[in-house]
Every structure is written in structure tokens, then in C-alpha cells.
Amino acid sequence: MERGTNDRVSAVSVYLVAQNRLLRETLVRLFQKRSGISVVGESRCSDSSSTEITQSKCDLVLLDSLGTCESIGLVEELSRHVPRTKIILFGMDEDPDCFLRAIQVGIRGYLLKDASSLDIITAVQAVARGEAVCPPKLCAVLFEFVSRELRRKSISVNGQKRTNLGLTHRQRELMRLVEEGLTNKEIAANLNLSEFTVRNHISRIMKRVDADTRHEAVEVIRTNIFSPVH
Image 1 (cartoon, one colour):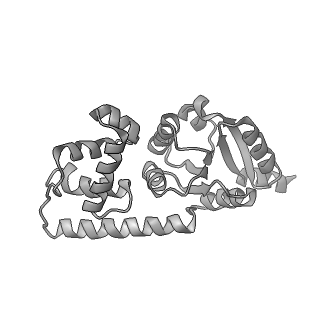
Image 2: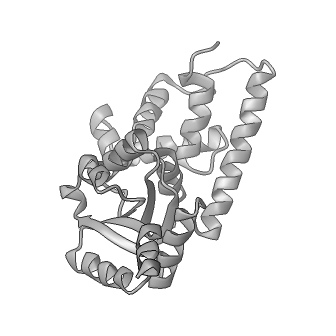
Image 3: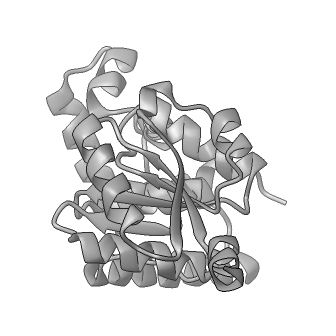
């Protein structure tokens, strides 16, 4: 009896957020079969709130999307107000922009759509131990991004002057909207442009600032233009 009590105390408590009810029920049954993992709550993303998740006192949130305003807002609120609660995304695409955005808002695990049930369980256990989990290719993307950022910061510290990188006012305005997380369609509507024109602008800007993704381009431009000079 005493041993069982200790097992329950040490169990990783998980709050599951998934839009598909069948998926939620399947994962709940999966975790119930594993000792050391306890599901303390589950809901759809559209019905979830940071308050509800916080009140569950979970150790970890398992979330199936970062593709909606609701899910991004939920992650940002949890990262800001309950930083001890770790977040894992699952069912994701191998998309460098989305991956870096997820890291920016505070996730600790990123699992692709082809992740197995064992992969999910292993990720939950690893993140609960204080580790981070991501696919090898995206891990390489993160290393490259950090390396570039450190080089840019070093250049800035050494007194390099900020420039406008040769971007037009319209291009800088467009990249501000990219930085805010708007889609190409939303940017086109804001600037009264076609989506084709927006894509072309972003592609040219990425080449000009030597960035592999639009997220990296935003970071370069923020360093050189958006941030004030101190």
C-alpha cells in the first residue's frame, strides 16, 4: 500500500489538449496503462483556458496544435504565468518556422505527426525530467539558428552600426506583420497586396538578409532595424 502511494505521488501529471475527441480518449487510455503518468484533465483547445489548466496543478501540458490563435495564446499565457508547467506539442509538421515559433513561445517538446505512442510516452517522461525533445532535423535547425544569433550579437557588441539592410519602407512594414505572426493572406489584406506579391517580397527579403526561413529573417531585421540603438 505504501509503495502504491509513493508511485502516485511521483507520477507525472498531464493535462491533455486535443481537438479530436477520439484522439483524446485514445491517449487517456494509453496513459492509464502506464505507471508514472497520470491524466489530470483533458479538453479541446477551443474550450481550454490557462486558469483551468493551472487549477489542475499539472506538471505538463500535451497539446496537439500551434496553428490557431487560441493555441498560441494558451501557450503564451501558460509560459508567462505558470513557467513550471512544461508544454509538449504533438502531431506537428517538420516546419522550421513553426518549430522556432514554438520554442519562442515556450514549448519544451515538439513531436511530428508520425510519432508513435511510445514516442509520446518517452517524450512526456523526458520533458518531466527537465529535458527537451525534438526531431533530429529540427534540432539541427535550432543549432544553426542559435549559432547565427550568437554571431550577430557578437558583431553588435563589437560596435557594428545598425543599417536598414537595403529594405524599402514597404518591406520593413511587411516584415513587422510577419513578426506579429500574421499569415501571408492576412499580410496581403493588411497591405492591400496579393498573396503572390507578399510571397515574392518575403522570398527576396530572406535572400537579402541571408536567412533560411522567414522567422530567421525577422530576427535579423529586428536586430538591425526594429530594436533601438543603445
